[in-house]
Length: 74
Image (cartoon, rainbow, N blue to C red):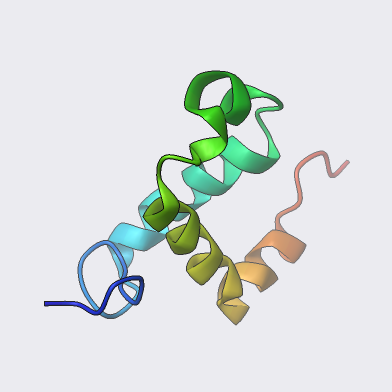
């Protein structure tokens, strides 16, 4: 069993599953304006999902990807 709040989608380590899912979760919060508030009440009912989002964002590779691949670049 995984310690609460210390795992990723497929286990204890970041995997291809997280690589596929996390960018879409990040986009819900950062790109699609009010969708999180309007459709999901800010995900307040899903604290583990919010913690997962923060774990993924804390990864240096995730932060670097967001720097390199910014939306709206000309």
